[in-house]
Image (cartoon, rainbow, N blue to C red; front, side, top):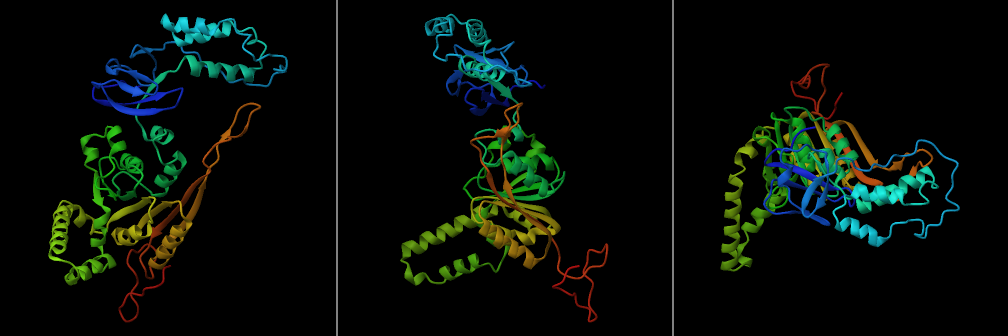
Length: 412
């Protein structure tokens, strides 16, 4: 268990509401984690994974928290003759409020409630665990500190990707240390952060972003070192059409530039200034653009709400042969369009998976599916890029035909 350092990001989790926040400590202002507000200066030098209770905007470590032990086997008791009307509890609400006002800790309040309950010992083991868990969440709401990690972000309420979907995408993308990867995502940079951790300090991770600025939230929370931050690069989505000189987007721009008679002088000047600003902005990405034109990237990963087909079509030429393509989308029509394109261009080992997921509670005598869950997670398409032609075993170049030309249109 590591120690919290000065200037490091720490994840705070409210065990009662499961609310999650990740901030850098120490900070000048108090941290508000509903419904608490507390200072974080005392956490420097403490270990991750400790439980704290908030008293007068200060974090007090909970040394011996009350824990709920799940029953191992069924019992013969029933709750048939227990009256759940509040008369079985000797302590009143006024007594509990006085205990809180006197600074009594939450675990002591829970222990007093157990000792002063006349029906606690008559309950079944399952009812005891459920009742105790309810009282702990009410009177002993703890703040837990955790080290930021991709797995923790997936399980939090800030993530847009489930842990099983993220694991499936990263596994299918064939990411290794030193790989060169394209990542196109519009939800957040969780996928970029997970791939950057695998690539480590070698290789390159290029995020294709559609907003004015790239997503850097999770990369900042993970406290990447300077060599690992150099691996991350960002390229705007609006400049992808420059990879294909004969693209329709560029042709439309040229046609609009050749028809100025339908606009007045002010509109012409405004449009010219916008094009000049765009060219000046593109200069910042010239070196990265030249690197993308080498066509030696190992993987292309797309997980976005928009149609992934245009991005796949423009970045297909930047992949090397035997490169991997992984596309995650919620719409089957987009998956079909991408499948038709990669089949036409040449691919192998293509698969489409519906990432259906179901959470099941597995407890002795209480195994059943959860009542509320997310079942569908979208479709994941995976394929490997191939060069067209007839190949001999172990060769990387197509076999020429009798007239010296390369035979295309067939792959063996």
